[in-house]
Image 1 (tube, rainbow, N blue to C red):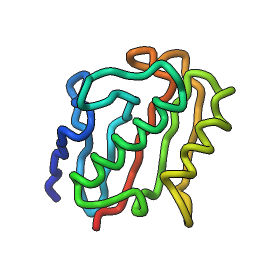
Image 2 (tube, helix red, strand yellow):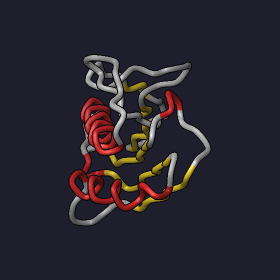
Image 3 (tube, rainbow, N blue to C red):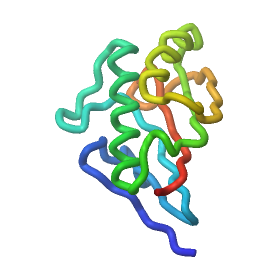
Image 4 (cartoon, rainbow, N blue to C red):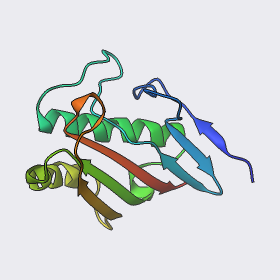
Length: 126
């Protein structure tokens, strides 16, 4: 049982002492992704742009691990304002189709870089 650290420059690098994802026992566990553009290092101010970038970042990390969005079994969504729940749901549906992953969504007091949302996922490899 060896774990593999997943890294890609197609998603923002870690903001601290953690990995973008860990692959172990046929599963991938991502760290929370913010809406930071990996090419510019910038994060847009608006929720919709942040949400799209979050899911693009997740997709890039999963691809680096050899899997994809269709293999996600669990998502954890952290919102700075629960009033954004419906707007995030609409964008979420663009990235997950068919059999949706299990999901938790919570409002938090504050996110890194004052982001409006952060999302982490668990996916099956292959």
